[in-house]
Amino acid sequence: MRIFDPHIHMTSRTTDDYEAMRAAGVRAVVEPSFWLGQPRTSPASFLDYFDSLLGWEPHRAAQYGITHHCAIALNPKEANDPRCVPVIDELSHYLVKDHVVAVGEIGYDSQTPAEDTAFAAQLQLAHDHGLPALVHTPHRDKLNGLRRTIDVVRESALPPERVLLDHLNETTAKEAKDSGAWLGFSVYPDTKMDVDRMVAALKDFGTERVVVNSAADWGRSDPLTTRKVGDAMLRAGFGEDEVDQVLWRNPVAFYGMSGRLGLDRGRPDTPYEGNSILRGEE
Ligand SMILES: [Zn+2]
Image: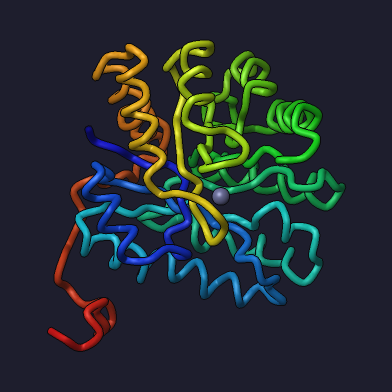
């Protein structure tokens, strides 16, 4: 089983995770920019983070035979902090880079006017740079948040077929599908969407333009949920081709719209700026 996790925050994970992911079949990941738990206080803090997503993290992933790409953005939560918002003016420098395959994650957290502004501005940036957009739909007040998200996408220059609406569940997937966007489901170990609900959703909504991710980060989460969904799909009667479509071909097609997906880029054993993950044992 070959797996592409289209949404995972590897910055928050260990090398044990990379090892287990590779053994489970994960060959490629996209790491969207997000909130680190500790609020940032200036745009410069984002720029160091973006540099790490473009440098150190792909290097670390390559040591385990996993290709790492990223999506760059001001995340919805920190779009509410006026100290952070000016980073939007810096994004163009990053959106031209080779490993950047989308603008994301953008969208709504608490559905505030500041989030409206940042969301619309970043959809425009995606359009201007020929990139697709990864859109986080809110965990609270989900259906209203989804409707508001679809309205903002409709008013933007970016067509819905270049937008992935993520963190969907049974209450939001139907309207998301009708909008023409791609459907993203984040599968969590014990809250929100779990493996069994995911398989049921695939039966209801089909496997076209659907991607499944772990959204694993610094919170309780599991970087192997993609594999668990693949196994559960087979047990439920889906064919191997349908598993490959959801876990590999769909994310490749979505991020492939950037024209920048390079799935043969792994360069194990090369140090990154003189540092290796082996901590001097080479
Ligand atoms: Zn995320």
